Length: 414
Image (cartoon, rainbow, N blue to C red; front, side, top):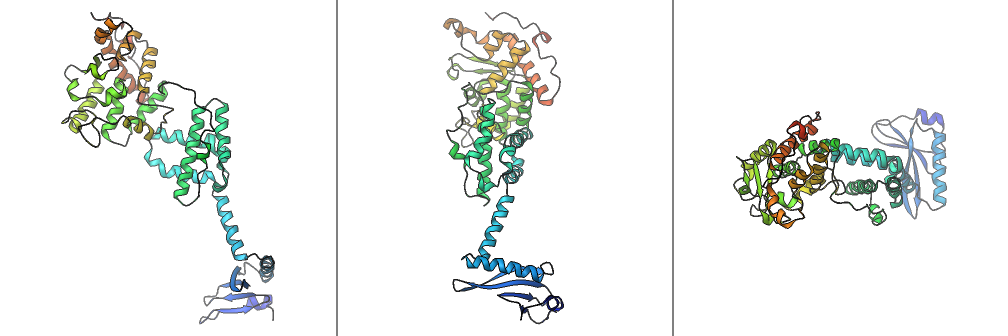
């Protein structure tokens, strides 16, 4: 006999057992010893008995329970298991709620601790400005390569080819995080290899606007890796020598009392000895580094053995760790930074070129020009270090121009 509303309402729990009050066509009300009431459907599919929960009473009335039963039986008549259909619907709902933005913000939160402030702001800014408006609302598992390409194409249309590549890179990082977390099965971004426009060729990417240099210096200040690598980054900015000259530096080449670094000719590109005046800041960094590596030959030894110098990839790897892509900055780019800003500050171009150890057209002069403009170069290198400190600290850079220290037009040394 089918149940009635009154019978369901008045049904009492039996503390000693679970009760089952039958309705019709497989529907019944299950009453737990503690008093809870559940609507359930008993059905058979392919010779196997199954049960399906249809909700709890009184949230689901007798009438609503029968409607749900009828919907489930209609599925059965079509050969569809209502339990599996429900699981599929639940999975779909979960996937739809798991949008790209939700997962990307989770990825960002997990990775954020390893980034310096400037890098974190750059990455979050790209996500919020260029990625979320395009694919942020899409369920993660439905996103295809073409969807990511739309975001990249918008940047390419404005000539921001490097940023377009970074967008694809960040999307790939989010998908790989999702795969590792069991939230996705595949990363669609590798399919975009070759789909983006080539970045116009440029030599040694660098940062040449003062604000950007200040952000870079603050990022280096917060570097969490090896103190030896951190010092290499700082000296690269202060001395702007070539990366190979920096990593192959030996303690024997430094005259601390004379505040000078003499790089032997065999190590130089043009095979001419090069003099690097050392600012007080550079000397301070060397003083910090000496207790760590001073007992060995190299100022920046390999992490594996003190018998070899630092790897050629170490500085660039540190810049990547700080959040700067290879299209934004390389170790060689510190030279472009110094060249651009020193010229903008008004330092004599010949002195800047000599300090950069750029080639001299006349072979005879090239053999003797390593000490040219040395008084100016000494003042310039100290002024450069002071200027970098001001940019790092966000202060007004005063007294860094040549006129503040002398006219900077001393003649080449004989």
